Amino acid sequence: MFGSLANMQPRQLAAQILQFALVLSTAFMLWKGLSVVTDSGSPIVVVLSGSMEPAFQRGDLLFLWNRRQETQVGEVVVYNVRDKDIPIVHRVIRRFGGGSKPLQLLTKGDNNAADDTELYARGQTFLDRKKDVVGSVAGYVPYVGYVTILLSEYPWLKTAMLVFMALTVVLQRE
Image (cartoon, rainbow, N blue to C red):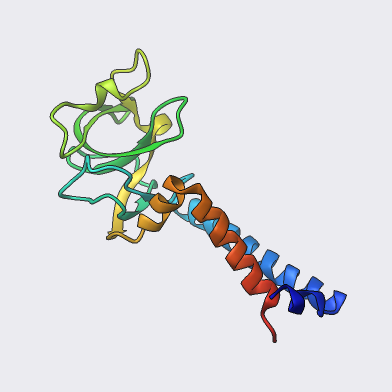
């Protein structure tokens, strides 16, 4: 395997490395493009827990839309707790304000007994629609995001996958 790498001409090796960089930059540009279109910093998220069962299972891939700011009761939203970077997928059970007043939301997981006030930041009793909500769920694909869960639970798997992808691109012959 590494013998073929050593036999490559410098120009051919540089072309393969640039091709790998092109693949990575294309993925990044697609992500940023989706972010602009959906008006969400994270247009695709993975369900990490069973708190929304039976509506969404652990590992479901969710597509978000954040262009509509008038969130309704019953809508499923993804929000970040202030000062933490973990997206939480829960349903809106109450709303306050709207129109000229800032829209505030109270959420709860379908599979949870209580609302989310314990999950919110200290001193926060409601979510601010503009500041806290990443987006509303517009669609989903079941279990596709389970790969992401595996990669985060087993860090060595992430490294192995990246090494495999890099070697595949570099050793590929045209």
